[in-house]
Length: 452
Image 1 (cartoon, rainbow, N blue to C red):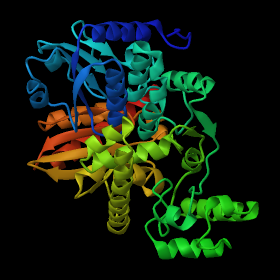
Image 2 (cartoon, rainbow, N blue to C red):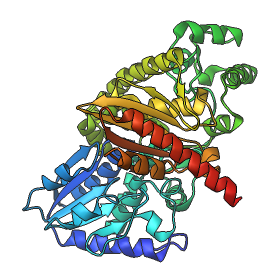
Image 3 (cartoon, rainbow, N blue to C red):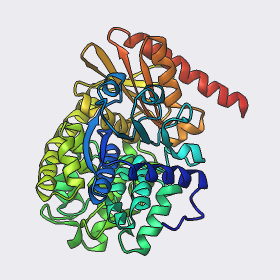
């Protein structure tokens, strides 16, 4: 691989060390996160291992707990952890095997024992400019240039972590530019309107999520009729004036429910299309996310490795997942969101939906002045998801730090990205946690204001 001047030497040197470590071993244990970026990361890593003739055992998990780490077979030669690990270095360093971590979450420290590949350590923002799957793809092409064909899988993770919404930067941009030169990826203009059959697309849409249209066939039909578009039409068949009318009506409805112009601009962002897969990165991300959130990570991994039956299975899983998401969002809209001084929050019965319900609420109809918190009770614990906006980050809010500190105060754990983070707290401590979080967020804003 010809190192690019766009990529820091510190990142490339870590990748080189990881590549040399892989050469030493014939069997590899892979552990990755279960969301779209985690499945994409595992797909890229396992695809690389297959091509290199390595045997592997892969697992996707919701969190890299000390229990998960302790269950790693003592005969393991090499452990590769992707889309997690940077916050679990203490436990990973105690393992007798060699460990490679390819993560993009903000690390608390570096490691001399673990091969720690994290863009933050090379001054690349892992929240916006380098997903875990992007790091894994850089590793893959370092191992073998033929692994450029895994770029679509990597971009599923980039899109899944919403690192495409404000344009590409950092490692993500480097991968796009190099991939475009090779004819692997191309940029296409975005739209508020869904591809394919419009009625089906509008009913199933969560990005954008339009109250009264998303999840409602009756509402979607009425919108199409108002725009002078036949209910059976697809996007390709529309005349320009029909496109403009339908787009304008959608924009007006979104504005009426409190969606800001910045979100509309993110929806019509460039899309990254892969001719070899005949789909764009967002489409692939939605398939992987449906697999992970429905506890069918193995289907997502098989799809990432090119299994056609798995692709068909993922499409079926997405149908069911989309219905559950829309039902969940309808409940949030109807039940409303509770508000404290600095946060807004709601309870969710389905843990697998917490992240997307939280994110859609924040983006499309929640209070833009307060980060959104979702709580879900499970097995004596309460799992928390949080989402913010770039505007809230500009006001000093750091959800990773806030959730980590607030969870620790009640005997829990937390962390993630400034704009999207999670936590786990003991059941019965959730009110105390929310109070602590509300106070911490308020302090973050006050500190930023005082420093301005």
